Image (tube, rainbow, N blue to C red; front, side, top):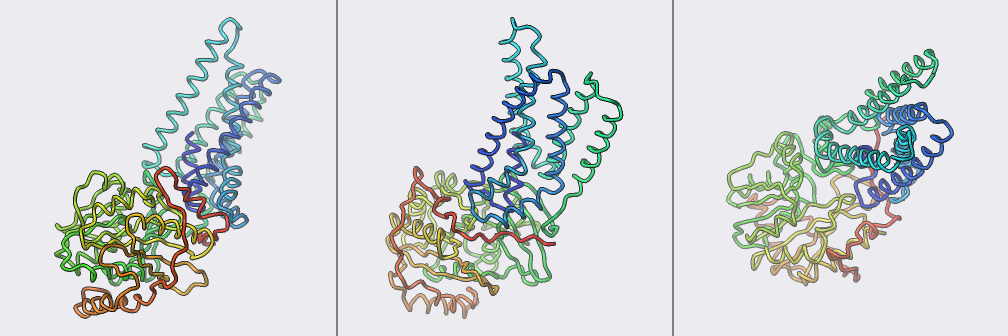
Length: 494
């Protein structure tokens, strides 16, 4: 079970952390376990004794060392060969995790074969072994998820699991198997070599400035000459221009804050999704009188914003480490502006796209207030279906929605863009020159980015086609993205 939990961390930087990835992991592990149980029982009857047990542990441990050593290189090879979001993770999990899961599952019937010396107590021995196996799985699940990942990181934990397996395998090998001493010495030397290289993995990604496994995702900080980036699993979530940390560099964020022009004398705002704290930093500088509640579910991301992205929490800002739905369910405050920036193309919390969620946002929006939702998209294929579903769902609470499609700051051949959905009472169905005039006035007062004026021209002209209505009960979000989606993966650095 520890390997299964770790598998999600190994696959996430390349394949993401979607329902497809978890389905691939669970399915592959279950298939490997079932076949491992059958093989372990079969081989134990043919070769009774501890030799089978030792072999299963040693092979699975050696494979675990290989995962730690070349696992990332294998993942990128698979991702390059298979772009389908279902079968790519399936093959990757099968190559990396199926062999050790197969070997470790064979251990249980092998141990049962050794433990049962008389048939009169077969039930007792079987019950004890299965109970012990279940307790071990529970310890591996809770220990990995609650403690070890945060303490030592995913790579070191994989290497440690390899050490435990090979150590137990050698112990059983020495315990009356009759193997020649020279064979044991050669086996130990081979495993020692694999164990050594496991601590020096083949890196396909450039070493980050900082990396940490949070309870929710892998968090990395990357730098180049001009910018600092926050990368969560496989997705870039924040960009900071190091020369001017308070600047809103990304065009979509420059347009999102233009919603301030639609609200007369705003007093309180809510940000769902903190990232590198770009919004909060900018508001603290240019709108210091605005009281802001910031909700972010990952405490490590909150800490990264302060330690690496120069966000210093002013007195009028309140940061809550909570899930957005949980926060809204318990809060009674209403807001003049609500910015939802919790989505990436490959990391979409489905419960923040449903009819119930937008109903909660409607309840927390003041009369005359404005909601802005950011949704990254390729503008085609499964992304288009997803966008249509979000718009259709939003309309149940916000009948009038204006869409802006904003490209990124760097030239690109892809169609990736940020779709910004503006909703609330001040939103006019066909846009209004008054909005542009108010934006221009605030730009002149240096209270909005100057780029916001030009970005108003990105308003989507064509109406959205009807889409699926998403609810807490029915939100096939990963399926909407579809197999035809060309995913923008984090590229390896050779």
